Image (cartoon, rainbow, N blue to C red; front, side, top):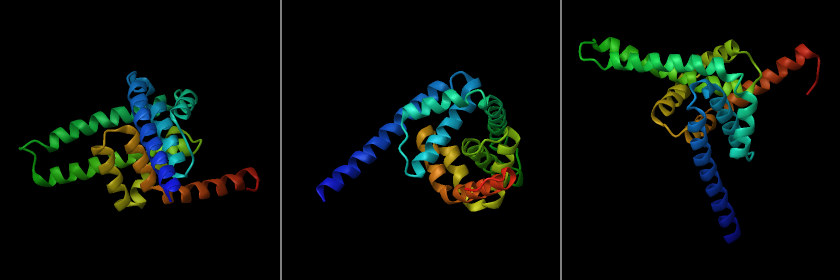
Length: 196
């Protein structure tokens, strides 16, 4: 009993430490704005490994970042632009002159687009797809799972600690991503003629 409690405490402590270190690394790697895509993709992949019960540390995060930063440039800059537009939209929705229906629509649009942004990097981390395919997959996820994605969007908007945010989103969507991965692997084996 004592040994299992000690092991659980050590495991939780290690995970908290990894989340904190990866969050700091993530912020540092996002300072040059061009590397946001690679940093977010690495964060998403590490978060997916955590939800699947695998161990991943800041060393794995840095390794993934080194391989993904070039692929993430376009996706990172696109999400940066969309995020800037969301902030502008939020400022407009907060104005007193803006009618209530426009405010409500603006808030719904902000949550919807935030959930898409949260899913883009997870889709990019899970599959070797083009930027447009990652965006398409993230949009489909946002449309097909509205309640789950409302929670995802709220987490993405309100939680600013990157490691914890990404881990919670991956944990919340674990079953959905497992289903997508199974479908993806099944469809690629049909196209390549391989069996898994």
